[in-house]
Image 1 (cartoon, rainbow, N blue to C red):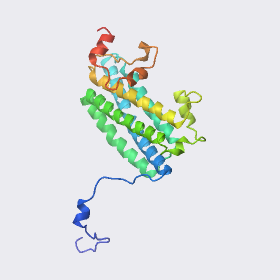
Image 2 (image 1 turned 90 degrees about the vertical axis):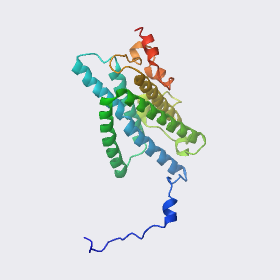
Image 3 (image 1 turned 135 degrees about the vertical axis):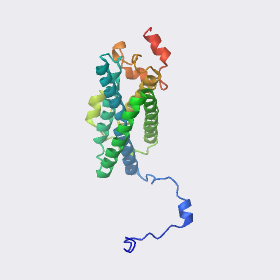
Image 4 (image 1 turned 60 degrees about the horizontal axis):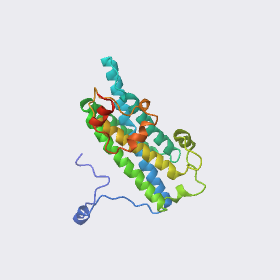
Length: 246
């Protein structure tokens, strides 16, 4: 092998250039760039965000069957969270279709993240819920920044009069007439992420086998998501136990 000529020999690096490399990326220069960057971030984010709820719900479902016991109402909330994240993804896919490179990146990221989360949830469910709570906090920040850019006129493609959000979004969120702009859609999705943040921080505070899920819709006339969205740090265990008078 040593005697074979190198096809493309490296020309080496100037030491100054090597030392001056910093993390960076190409800044969007126009409306098209900004919209593309946002959609790529949203789509990649949602392909990952839909995994934790599915894993937690599945493992708790199996545990409930194995122990011949109820799960204290956690399964439905967790699977609904996963479904909600998938609806975010399906909505954005109506606006942007990823190419092969991004599909491969999603496939690889899901493989690593799913298996890591699966094993970790078996070891420490509370840690996983806390991790997801912080992950959702980042999602809230991402969508908040998007709203700020829209308000500053940097995403004009989404604010033009003729722009229409996907019909799947109108049906899923039951968006009323006059509230069907892209800004309204991002507000709805951000509220969803805020709800997941509150739910997971709460679940991370509870005993993973015996404490009840305080976000069961049957316990209130309003969706649990309304309450959870207003609790960024989650409910403390004492609040939950007091609610159920245990």
